[in-house]
Length: 545
Image (tube, rainbow, N blue to C red; front, side, top):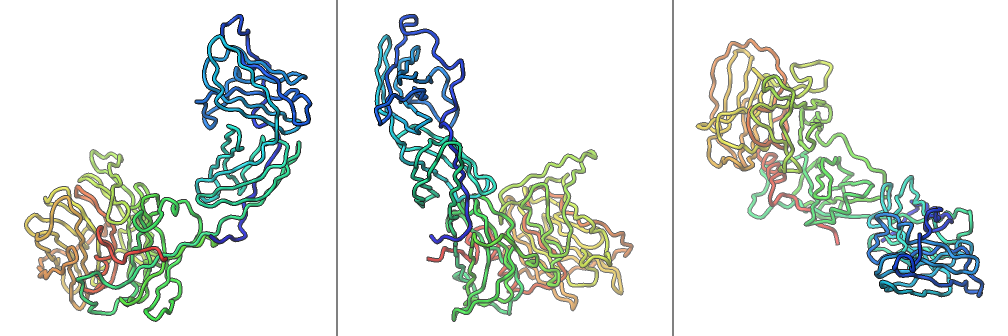
């Protein structure tokens, strides 16, 4: 592992490791009065002088230093001769600790067995503690916790990193060796000179972390070669526990970048990348691939020395993305189209209530959203064309496309989405998924295309992709299979009142909805399906050796 110049300052101040004994911390009574055992002895310093006024603690073997303070009844202080006495302590197994604040010397003996009606003598010479060790369970960043220990004692202290500093107080006044553990790395920093009433600043090099993953773009086995050139296609790259240490990656701060590498090793410029999901279960990065060659590879890399940052043009409106919903947040449905801005708002129509009954669930990519027949999602500001906006959701007489995943609880008559008197996707038990498109060109008529019911099952994820060209031409896919759907026309009056785009009217789950004003050909649609499908998705990331 390499190191860079990012630093963490550990500030070490000198006071007693335990808090001072208050006036009520003496032991009431004695062994003769209570019948309880007594622990007593004399502590000296290594120069032979008495360890006067040293703190003494009798620590039960089951005491958890990380969960609370030692009860006052188990603590006392030596007198001027170094003598101490503890009585009325229960029978049990203990560790006896002593700390002399003036010299910084201490003592520890473990497994002291105290029995009823018995007196135990523990005496010794106090010595230097030697070293302090700080163990981080993850990479150092604000909010990270660490455990501070002094070997040879039962001392255990929890600290939190804040503003790039871990303030470790209550260390003895002495020369201590400082050792830092960060995950699997051990960092020795030599001696720290702690003096009374002073603060010592120790600079710790922040580990420089780099990860690299590679995803070959060769099509999965059994897939034909591409029938057309594909460009400007967004691809999802997935990191999971199967191909990465996702639990560690979820806690890192830094920058993720992607480039395309050709067969001869040439590297493209950095590709636009945005993150939609990142937790201890999985990470999903969307990358806009400017051109696609199945002999190329994508390289996903991480560098914690760089500031975090993502692009805003993975789903650019100049490539006909009007609305993109990933449904990765239950309450904030964000439109990831570059200049679409059609954020979704949840509404519940039942009895006029605003109580929303939708919820997140496992999806095709990350999470999906679950709706019932009374709950819908409204795309804000989508009712009509607005010349001040870069894009709109009205496609009358223009090219029109969408793709999505839906999981229906039952195969009854229901609406998946609609923009009233403009277009809709519905399910019909006899016809399958039906696409409706209303036109007011030279004549007013409604066009419909039905998928049929083959391959459609309740309770399973179904991929639906549809494209309409103005020439005219259509492209209709169900689960990666092209459907030869005939167009049916019917009259309508052509009197349109622009309405908001609405998702809802069905019971089930929906994920990865993309809506736009383009015609997507066979290759583009098939690759989208291969990339997004829940199992055996393409392309597959693996860690570069």
